[in-house]
Length: 484
Image (cartoon, rainbow, N blue to C red; front, side):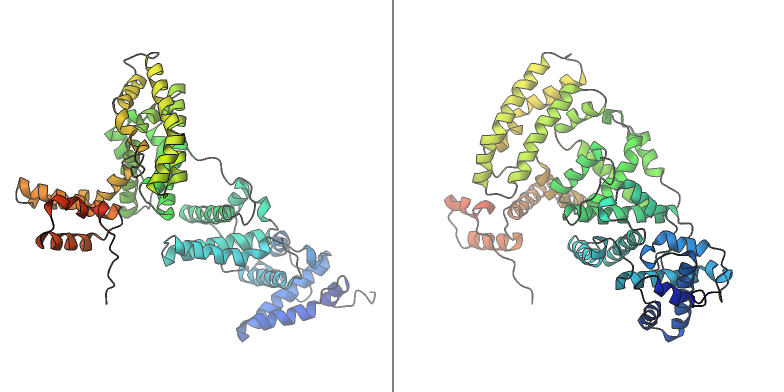
């Protein structure tokens, strides 16, 4: 036996590179907080280095595939047994040692993956700002960290991540050295991995932190439109939008492309046909999402053209939707601006579209059968054209009634109490007060302070011919009083 072969395995590995095994093991032992576990962790690290030496693998070439080979090898290493290598806890100690070497820089990692800690901190801040509760934040942060560790161990950079990589992560038998669950994972666990990973990667894309390949094919147009409607017209948070769109995407195939074909049997089957193990709360939420989706379908005149476009090839309905989408695109750009600016922008950009759309609809109405659903949809829109175009001349008016419908939702929920108004006059007075309250909210006025002040002024003898000065839009906004 030569002098070279008489060297200990660790020292022999040291001669192959500038890596110092003894110093690395000593530093690794020092990083372990518990004194009782330092010896088994150091033993696993020495065994791994011994095996690397016997296989002729440089420390810089170590990755998750090398660790898997170590876990599966039929051990014949000096002073070590095969039973040790098959122990999952033993292999996890090796994985932790590998991660320690990566953090030290002994094992090279992808540069952009090295910024994982910074990405996770910014991701946690965004989740908190979006209103996620602490349990949801913890779950999503855990999946994001898990994805980063897996990409790091697999030597996959952010720029290489795509839908197939996400699926590999979702189904991998975990050994990421952080106490993650390994072995068979339930369907719910796979779903949480997938949703958490996609959510984190979407955050990276939206913040222009890294460039990613397309993660998934384009969503169903109905699901995308439903999400936009929830976000812009119902005031839903991003968390609610994600949840509702995900649930809606599950039952869209069962509903079919033609909303006019929906019936009670289909809706009942969707609500009751939930995956095994779903709680009553999950079933109730599915019913809520379904009702919300049906409300979206019937929210305004667009739904009639939408139904026709979804039911099959319908070039006229599709073009109508495209023209209407241009109007909503303009509204998204000018939302939040002063009323004068909105009116000017609508006169300059939206009015030509509206005028052209009316002429186009009247022209197409003469070309289609008057008994067809398309003709019915066109007549429905033209009969309400004055109302549909009212937003053009008043910058305070929205393009649709969704804002008002959203503001009267609490009143609708309170309608059972209205049964006890006492009389028709009481109901009318109730409606008057409710209108004043919601109008005050729309104009940024504190309703309680407004009503108290207005009633006080009327009692004090405010001139009846100047009553317009007390209307919500003419009233100076009153800030909320601080509560001691």
